[in-house]
Amino acid sequence: MHIKLILMEPKYQVNLGYIARTAMNFGVGKLYLINPRARPDGKQARMYAKHAYRLLEGAKICKTLDEASRDCDLLLGTTGIRQKAKASFRRIYFAEDAVARIRKMKSNATVGLLMGRDDTGLRGEEIEKCDMLAYIGTSPEYPVMNISHAIAVFLYLLRRGELRTHNEEGMREKKPDAREVRKLLSLFESMISRKSMRNRKAVLGAFRRMVRKSQPTEPELHALITALK
Image (cartoon, rainbow, N blue to C red; front, side):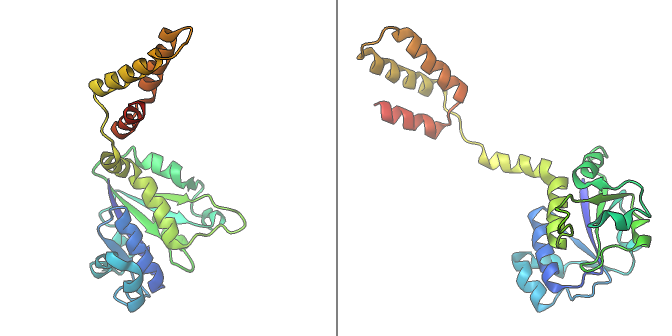
């Protein structure tokens, strides 16, 4: 799915910088800013964006929500205060429930993630233009999250499947081949053959099953072989 990150009248350069970093973390290639009150090219925005500053340089400035969301198949609005949005939406989804429904859409769908103003959030008329409204469950003592933190949660939920696949490829460790496993078992058998025990065969069988169930990585197997040698 294609995610279109839309910010409604962002006010603070610091937030813009952090949002750019967060967006790049989760593979968002472009920002859409509706009537920004903060300068995307400002000094603070650049400083806090770090290496993601190019997203601010290439941000699309829009005048209206209709312009920013024109090509979206679904517009997902967000709120930090459920009571504020109940007048427009009878049902407000928890973030993970909203994303579960969105995942059922066609793979090439464009989903607009609409974030409200840093200070006052979305207004009623903007909420009414959304197809879904989502809320992040937080502590009732302090429910409203910073906009950059909320974006991180939503983008993680939306992208976690493909990002997990990508990261697992780099983390996957090489498994030892059968010859190395046989070598370990042979060393263990040789070791216990020199010891006096009642049921040497059962001990060997237990060790063999333990090794196969644990599925040691290649470095772990080599460490065991070195120890038994």
